[in-house]
Each structure stands twice: as C-alpha cells, then as structure tokens.
Amino acid sequence: MGAQLIDGKAIAAEKRKAMMSRIESMKQQGFVPGLAVILVGENPASMSYVKGKIRDCKEVGIYSELIRFPDTVTEERLLAEIAELNENKEIHGILVQLPLPNQISEQKVIQAIRPEKDVDGFHPINVGRLVTKQEGFVSCTPAGIIEMLKAIDVPVAGKHVVVVGRSNIVGKPASLLFLNLDATVTICHSKTKPLSQYTQQADILIAAAGREGLIHAEDIKPGAIVIDVGMNRNAAGKLVGDVSFEEVKEKAGFITPVPGGVGPMTRVMLLENTLIAADRQNKKSSL
Ligand code: NDP
Image 1 (cartoon, rainbow, N blue to C red):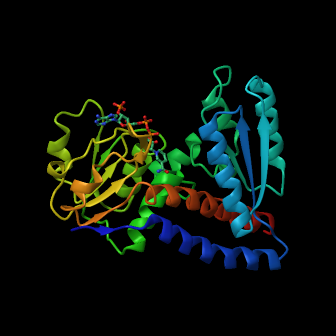
Image 2 (image 1 turned 135 degrees about the vertical axis):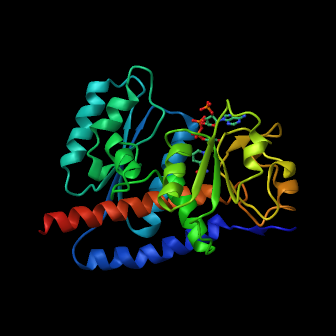
Image 3 (image 1 turned 180 degrees about the vertical axis):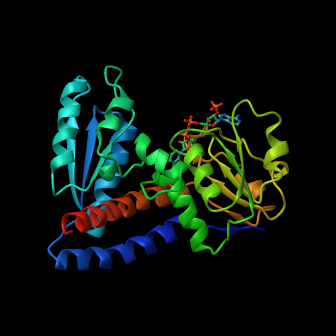
C-alpha cells in the first residue's frame, strides 16, 4: 500500500479524551454543557444517527436531551419546542435531525434555532459568518475534515483543493473553510465535465458526491491526499465511500477509509461545537 491511512476513528477518540478533561473542569465550576436533539418520526437511519449522538454525549459527560415527535407533528408544534429550547439555560446546542416530513419546512425550522445554539452550523447566519470569515458555527463534516488534516500535520495554504459536491452541509462549507485557510479551491458537481480533468489536479481531493466508485486511481494525482466523505451501500450491503479504495490507496499519499474516516470526525465535531456553544454562552452570561 502506497498511501498512509488517516485513521479518523483514532483521531476522534483522542479528541474525545481531551474533551473529557475540559468538561470536567467546566463541571467543577458548576457548569454542565447541554445538547438537545430533536427527532421527528422513525426513519431508521435518523434513529441510529441520533442514538449515536446521545451516546457520544454520555461518553464525554455532555448533558443531552432527546425530544421525539411522531411524523404527524405540525410545524407550529416543532417551532414552539425550538422556541422553548432557545430560552433553556441548560441547553447550549440544539440539533434537529434531518430530513423532516413534508408538512414541515426545513428552512423554517433551521432558522428558528438561535444561531448561538445552532451546533450543526446550518443557520443562514452561521453560513454567512463562514462566508465572511467570522466566528460562528461550521457544519460538523467539513469541520471534521479540517481537524483531520491538522492531526496529520498537513498544511493547507497554497494547496489546490478540489471538492466534488456542492451541498449546503458538506461541499459548500468545506470549500469555504479551505478558502479561508488560503487554499486554492475548485468546486465540482454533477454538471462538471470531465470530472477527472479537475480531480487529477488536486493536492487534496474531497470526494463528497454520494456515488460509489466515482473516483478511481486514474482520477488522482500521485501522492494526493484523498478524503472520502461518501457513505454508500454497495450491492453486497457494505458501507463504501465514493473512492475505489483498493486502487486509489496505491497511488495516493494519504487516504481516509470508509468506515472509520470522516464519519467519526463528524460525530466528534458535534461534541466540539456543543462545547464551544456552552463556553460562549457561559462567558456571555457572566459578563
Ligand atoms: P447531496 O446529495 O446533498 O450532494 C451531493 C453532491 O454531489 C451534489 O452537489 C451533486 O451535484 C454532486 N454529485 C453527484 N453526483 C456527481 C457526479 N457523478 N459527479 C460530480 N458530482 C456529483 O449529498 P451530501 O453532500 O449530503 O452528502 C454527500 C455524501 O457524503 C453522501 O454519500 C452522504 O451520505 C455522505 N455524508 C457523509 C457524512 C459523514 O459523516 N461521513 C456526513 C454527511 C454526508 P449537483 O449539485 O449538481 O446535484
């Protein structure tokens, strides 16, 4: 194998360990960080993500509340719950698990969360803060990618970063984060033709399209850093990324596995954002 593996699971475990002592010292000052997670309906994937988030909070000592609604819940009821959580002093972060049923506007719900408690970083105010390089909250997956690169000591300034995918939760915020770190950024999407002409130029390639087997060895530059965000089920039901791992690892400099790469980093960044939110709100209230 040519490439070095970036072990997201191990990096995330280190981060959780460091967080535990931060949380312990917060608690000694009589202050417990808190996260509220709202789950609507019984989508199995959403249920399993939410379960993981609550378990992660327990593990590091963050107080968490799971608030469940049936999928028949009205938008009004959901907005009323968020309004209450916005005022709740024990809750510093609010997360609404997406997707939501059709009768509810996701944009309305996201915008109802106070930006200071928007630990998912989806509120337009936080997106605007990212665009203008101000302090706010950044979506967990892109933030996790940057943390990963920091952990392996890869400088980003001056590098050509090619991001495949332009979604609001991964591709766009990842591109902006890299731009803010002085990388040269190319954003590709489903209309980019031919994709390989761009990916072959990447010093750092972020594959976030959700397409199994999109990136092959011939699509990358030798020695490139390849970050695979994709989570796809292959024909055998196995979780795979967007990158053909076995062939690309022979040519890349660094590569993330799926699972065990970006996924665990995404999870740990939610905890990190909750701690940041708690810290900021605590400082504000003690002014
Ligand atoms: P979306 O479906 O919202 O966005 C996919 C993006 O990829 C779109 O911008 C789309 O282009 C682009 N795209 C699709 N097909 C191609 C193609 N053939 N060539 C180039 N670009 C293409 O997905 P998300 O951003 O939400 O997620 C992306 C992947 O990452 C998914 O597999 C998801 O499961 C995974 N994911 C993993 C996380 C983790 O923690 N590991 C967290 C979040 C997501 P266009 O805009 O033109 O349609």
